[in-house]
Amino acid sequence: MPMTVLDKVAIGLMAPYAAGMLADPATTFKPIAPGMTDTPGKKRMVRMMGGMTSYIVASKFATKDADKKTKRKMNAVFGATILGFVPLIAQMDQEEDKAVKGMQMFNCASNIVMGGLHLKAAMQD
Image (cartoon, rainbow, N blue to C red; front, side):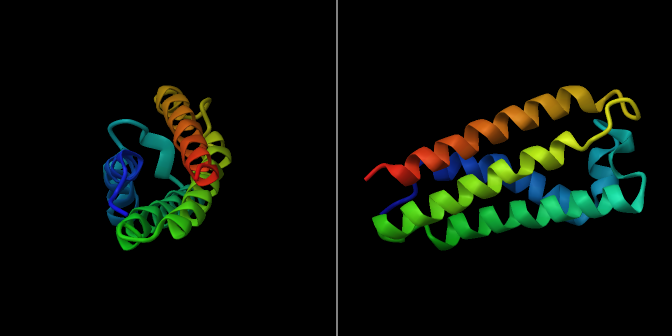
């Protein structure tokens, strides 16, 4: 079964985040959220999210030719993983870093939509 539009959108949305979060989150996020990586705890959280995001991207490529049953199972895993980002994103401190609010709202919304679409895809035959 070839890659779906949802697979391609997920890769396109998640791959840049994965690279930025794993490579050098302080440099990547300084222009948009300067305080996001200013403590060791925040930096670890961003790197953990980068690892989870990398998993999604790599798994999308690994299962691109999978059968329908496997794709459904993986979409359930992807949907749950993507929705798991929302509480992590919500931990960003808006009082400490004013630039975070817009990014936080966009990322929460996009993760809820992407997670929901993956769960919907998992429930379809």
